[in-house]
Image (cartoon, rainbow, N blue to C red; front, side, top):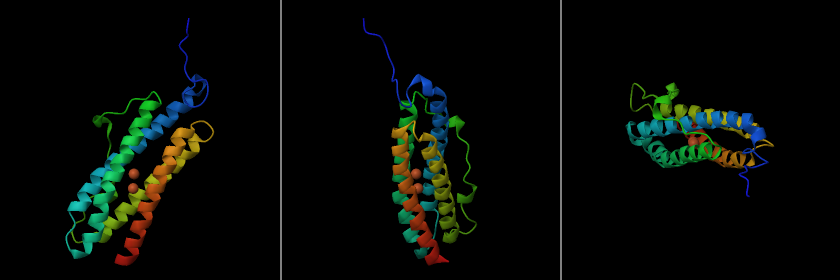
Length: 165
Ligand SMILES: [Fe+2]
Ligand SMILES: [Fe+2]
C-alpha cells in the first residue's frame, strides 16, 4: 500500500515548518508592497501635469504591469509553501511618500517617492533572499530575479532625479 508522503528535503519538509512560516510572512509583506506600488504608480502616472512629466509618466505606466506581475509571483509562491494569500481587508497602506503632491507639476516629489518605494523593496527582498539561504532555493531564486527588476527601477529613477534637480 502506498503511503502518503511529503517532501523530505527543502522548504516543504516537515522539519522546516517554522522557517517556512517565517518565509511566508515575509512573502505576504512583499505581496502587499507590490500591491501598494501598483496603486501608487497608477496614481502617479495619471496625476502629473506638464511636458517635463511625460517621461516619468510613461516609465511608471510600464512599471505598473511589471509590479503587478511581481505581486502575482509572490502570491503564487505563498500558495506553493502551503500558505494562504491574504484578503484585501488585511491591507495596510505605508507609502506616505507617494501621495499626490500639492502641485501636480511637482514631478521631483514623484521621482523621490518612487526611489523611496524601490529602495524599500530592495531592502525587504534582500532580507528574504538571506532568510531563504540554504533552505528555500526556489523562493530565493524568484526573489533574486524580482530584486534585479527593482534595482533596475531604482537606477532609472536615480537618473531621472539627476536630470530634474
Ligand atoms: Fe516590484
Ligand atoms: Fe519596482
